[in-house]
Length: 106
Image (cartoon, rainbow, N blue to C red):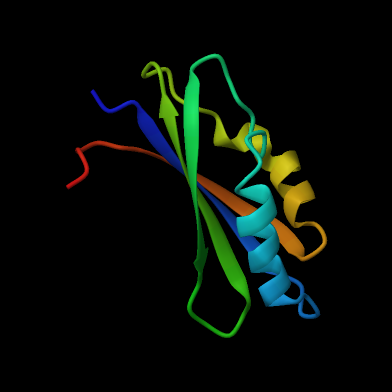
């Protein structure tokens, strides 16, 4: 059984935000912090990716996959305040999506 879930934190940057500084902050600081997201008793690890949306607005998605010890699930919304603190110098957290993995990765 696959005990992983993926959460996506949607972020819109302010018009005056430095996108390169934002990307560097996320990849070099936030993604390297083992406490960037709330660890639980059943959390083994997190894997992060930063995705840039196509279009004229500077929009990004922080995709994180959590490896769990059980199939109890993970509450990505519990991290909303923490994620906003991570991005507050650059923009605003505007949404959160959570996904379960229904088929094995190929």
